[in-house]
Structures are given as C-alpha cells and as structure tokens.
Image (cartoon, rainbow, N blue to C red):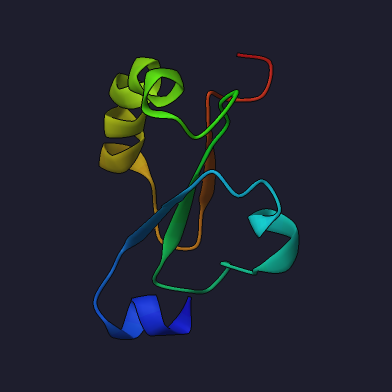
Length: 72
C-alpha cells in the first residue's frame, strides 16, 4: 500500500476479502474498494460496475467501502 501511495494511486480495487484485516488505511491517502463477488471472473464482476463507479466518486482517503454493501 505504501508503494501504491508513493506511485500516486488514490484507490485500491480488490476482491481480496482479507485486506481489511491485513491493512490499516486510517490516516492514509489511499482508500480501498472491496469487491464482493462470487468469483473474480468478468461475468461476476460486470454487474457491479455501476456500484464501483459510484463508490469511486464518493470514497474518501483512509476509507474502506464494500461493493455490494453488507446486507445489499
């Protein structure tokens, strides 16, 4: 994550469900959008594209957003 910040990235998109337990983003310039899908295959990810684009517009540095949201 440090290298991503140093390279100028603002957001990390991932399907790695362990990231919230492995990485602390509080106080960082980087945010994480955690994508929850059945698999990481394109056919499972495509239905989530609009939600991901919306999240990219609203996510704040140091924040972790989950797509779809828990219970959603």
